[in-house]
Length: 331
Image 1 (cartoon, rainbow, N blue to C red):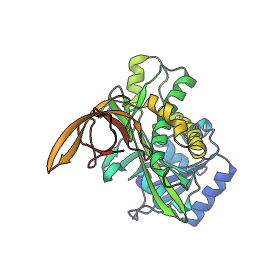
Image 2: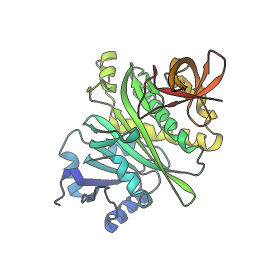
Image 3: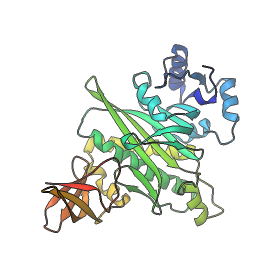
Image 4: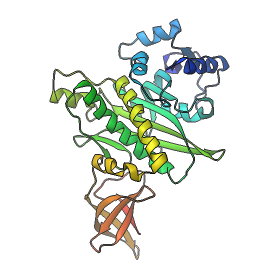
């Protein structure tokens, strides 16, 4: 198969250490795509990579991202492609070959992955990336999606503060969606594989920065609030994300999710929200109203019923809303 922009990837490093990794990976030619598409691998310093980056003014600015990044472990090795099937498969299928904290970014993603194998196309204007991390405690692994979502919302706030922009009130809809003004603008996907007594975690994020379809985007809301303000840039948001994620991840590892609960509950949409849950009694579906209190230790919703009984709420099927479709288990 002749390679074109859809299967070209550019390696970029924050320092000489990551640049050496990039050179070795290109030489060894070990990176593969899940569908066996041939990949054209380039270093950022090569003329062909510069031509590819300059071909489209809206391409991801590798230098701006690296200048925005201060994280010590995450994001320092980056793979960029103008068009990919999915960034998540790039990092998950090549996990053992990539350095921990490596990130893959695509300008266009035509087989994006979501929960329960949902697939969609992500157009230009979206910040789409997946990165690698490693965990040991299997009980903590399900909580990492909440930390990633929290880091997204904190990154948006951080860029607003740094650039003097109006406050953009992004929120988390449990379990893995990012909302703005009641509309979805992003989502989180985390998968894990157990290998050599550790969990290889691939974390992916899609955030609609500059495309108003099909709902809205960060820059549309920003322009409504302040038409003369600088706009959000994907590169600055990604740099801020890794700075925030690294801090939050370290807190999770040292002190557990309890240390993040207060911030998480301030950011999500569901405190004291009343929802309808379904119980099956004698082959009949019975609906009950409960009030959300927080999260259980396993990462599901904690709620209290009218009978003062505490319940753990779990979604049924591959999607649900907060008016129906939840099941409950007594605690």
